[in-house]
Length: 280
Image 1 (cartoon, rainbow, N blue to C red):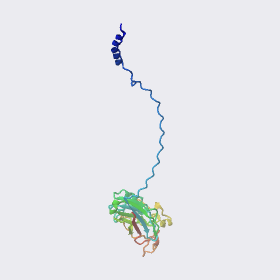
Image 2: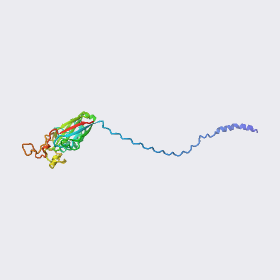
Image 3: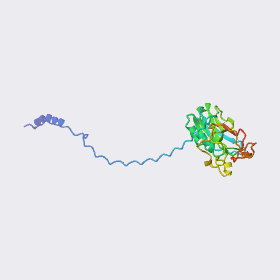
């Protein structure tokens, strides 16, 4: 046999086999194993705290101060109720019965219930009680009140304080108009004395809370307010003044045998000056 012929004849078959099988190109290998997890990063440091903001200045409020001067020779004034409000509220009305709050102040010198009555009124804006009594012939501490700017164009003030060496006398203002005061402006009012009409003016040591009654063996807070009204008039009215014991034994002169008051406890009207200043 001719070996050269056999080799040439087989060449096409070898070529076909080589083409059909194909070689491995390395792209189909199995995935490698996953690497180990990385180490966690460290936490960042906390940021510093922010600084506190400054307080506001109540820019939408008007500020008023109120100061009382006691003009009497010997009558101490009780803590006072100072009320800023809109028209329509009245702490008292001449000729009408006193409210329970006014009765408590006029008989016992306590302004708390009168302020509570004002707080319940729709016209209420702000109120404060003065800090302690105001002695005779002295100027009291300054009180500060705040109201919305929108309400200064129709603003009223009511002010009441008891003359404590009496049964039920008080002085003050009733819905006085302080509308549209300019910043820095002051307004002064002179106020007379009123009788609440809730307690008979016997001026005995057991019915008055002030120092004159105390010096006679009575007085004290428990001697002031009595819910029972024994003044037959039972209406707020202008006070005609106290009747002392100076001439009690002389029928031709004015005098009251039950009174523990002296001539020093009398007063002339007005009994108080009230100064309101707008400071902002």
